[in-house]
Length: 78
Figure (cartoon, rainbow, N blue to C red):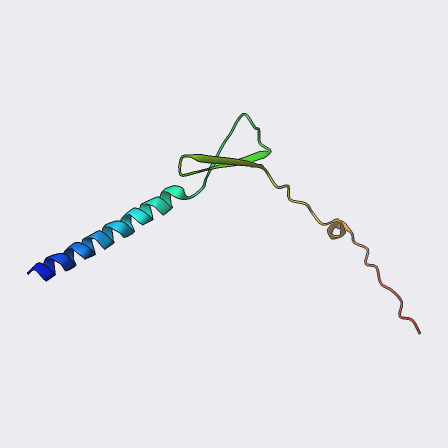
């Protein structure tokens, strides 16, 4: 009977550990937040309700050659 209780206790402790680890991972994920003081050109995120980081937003640059309809071809050398 003692062996069964120890085994059940070990399973319960293992299960509780996994549940607490899952909760910790869920809370530690970065979440986007709005910061009106910095303006729209900044992107901020908060991790685990403690650490807040902000970085400038990355502008999507369009390639210069994409808008051009001319195709440059070289004549083959003979």
